Length: 498
Image 1 (cartoon, rainbow, N blue to C red):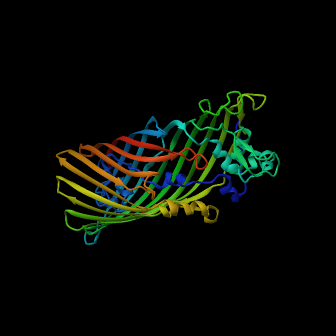
Image 2 (image 1 turned 45 degrees about the vertical axis):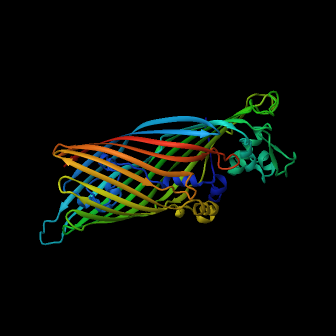
Image 3 (image 1 turned 180 degrees about the horizontal axis):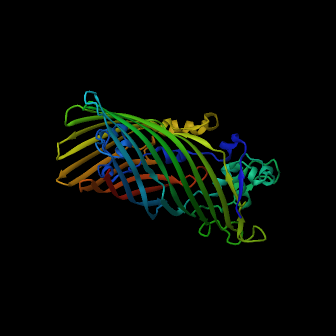
């Protein structure tokens, strides 16, 4: 039976489970999602409108609609992660299906023909802005660093008496990690006294530690948008979105380390290997708003501008950890099992993602097609955990590690009778100043559609690649794994006039 422990004191939020830069980046980055027409043009829709996902770029896009419509989108989401860790290459794939988008819009024409206000629109649209289904696997021989250094880095400075006498559920996060290291025989205190605060690694000396890390994540980040739009004369369109965000994320990490090939290992004494399991569950909700405008400079040339506010999230986390250690002389039972059998429920915390500015330009070739360009700016160094006093160290890391970025999306569409043919390209700069932790993103897309009259069917394929560097732990064992991540998406949208 699972046991749960709730930290009742809000001030424990930082010390109990310290949030990291990578946790914030999970919700701060955009993904190419939405309808097949939108994806087929790589999301370059800020000056065009007339598409449900375009409303998510520029809310004024709703006022471009001329009829009441509903749309539903299904997607197949596939990822491939190729990792390299100290010369060893591994590859992991994941594949999932997703109800990616569902929306409806109502268009109300102004019956007063003398008025400059031509119409107003009301829309509701749901999109899965992030699909968290993913798998990552890395393995190799680390020449110098053991996971014992992760545990000792947490334990140093903590009195041994706190590790041995305080109930696990009342410990801070650092003390809990020290607990696993101590009772898993991976760290040794310098002195066996309650006031000892110095610990050393108990891993065999000599390096060449075989390590594996397998991460499986599931979940989503969804956005429900309520939109209002108006058209002024035949040239200007304005819109507003009020967005409700909700997220559900689960990550299971299994780390394995083996000492059989370590030169200094004694196979009859001390730890021979271990498996450290972490199960993290994050859930919560948030709010944001968007404003935008589109202008027809000429019947062919259109420009758009939009602002997306930060998203203000309130998030909750639950964490469960356990460890199994192969140690023939560490106690009366082998393997040694360190499992407090507790799911830690931490106090909720707040996250503010960065705002975003988008400028757009489009040229429409009558009934024959169009070309569109979006340029967006976002400053990731503005990410903040709240309350600021509790997260001052992490918030300082956002400023020192992250940077302002630019994103370019280019899309085109050609029409031939009922058929539409689409293609697109997008480029997004790395949000990190070093350009390596998360690298630049490049993507391509293609799509087609067929208009049956009151019904349209669209299909799209999109491809994106990005290189990253991922560490197994946030401290102690921080050797980086190089990851080449590739995503492939196939999307199908059915759109109906009402």
